[in-house]
Length: 425
Image 1 (cartoon, rainbow, N blue to C red):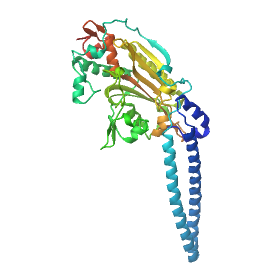
Image 2 (spheres, helix red, strand yellow; image 1 turned 180 degrees about the vertical axis):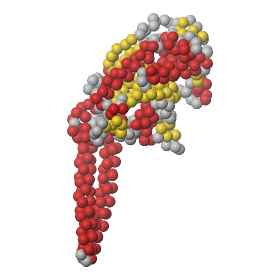
Image 3 (cartoon, rainbow, N blue to C red; image 1 turned 60 degrees about the horizontal axis):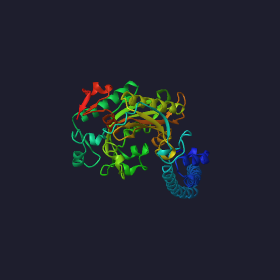
Image 4 (tube, rainbow, N blue to C red; image 1 turned 60 degrees about the vertical axis):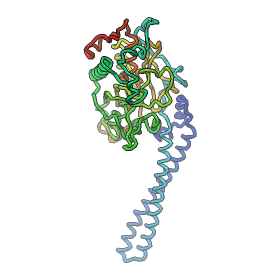
């Protein structure tokens, strides 16, 4: 969430930067400023009334001590009037603050100055690529055709048990899933991340803190009777570990890694691009989260991008790294890099990770602050997160890129985790 101070001091810049995200904010910004003027006016009147009320209270005591009962009673009546006026002003202040808050949560985060303008994925910027794309082969199959007879990933059974988008993994496919999870966690721990295992249901405050509410409410599964939400990503519970916390600057950066199942309704998703493992309602993902000092949060972003790049490289997957344009970025992000891997059976790139810096946007919602040693003042921290990695499309790419006759060769780095080096179909 943007701060009132930023909006007051740099109104035109805020409006200009939000246009990069194709968001016209001028009317909302003006309304926020008008309401904030009203808020400050009400607060000033309340402060003046409180001062007068304190003065009257002293006068009442003095009148009684001097035996001036009638004057004391008159002052008490005036005190009652002030209290009633104060109650009304307090209600007006609360209403005004709520109106400001309702407008603030409608504003997306400001994109970083390096974010390119654009409206769709076609306007994204290619940063670099790596790996070798397999030679085109008409015998290669998309993973849903490749597994049709073996049922190692059973989409029909998942549909029977739950519905579309909830596949059942069997035998070697289930072991491959588990292997990838453990591999990603072990690599993260080696890179200095602390592993946590958070809940997969969160309350409304947590969903609000990281920006899922109110922006993505329709994309989350909601356990209405309990007021809880199934997480779309481990980013939500892990980042909320630091909600309402004041950290020490000396303890930054903080690095956390977590494996969780993730749940997304993906309402309105249709077409061949969402077949098989390409888009699911439930999937497994390992997430990395950092809390950083504002002075080096983009150093942290580069570090996270390099780390995710090392993972896809170790898996021998052809990849490319893309900086998203304003129109393709999330509501909360200031800068995002997407990772895509090549799926040879489909002949297309699949997104497998987004790595983002939210700067202070989430921290302001979370009230996540830090202070320097010897300084009582607090400053909003910067939060970052990234997929490291999301499993379904990684599995799809491994299956499609490593076809060899009736076998699928497993990347060598995973052999100690799978216990096998190939899957026979």
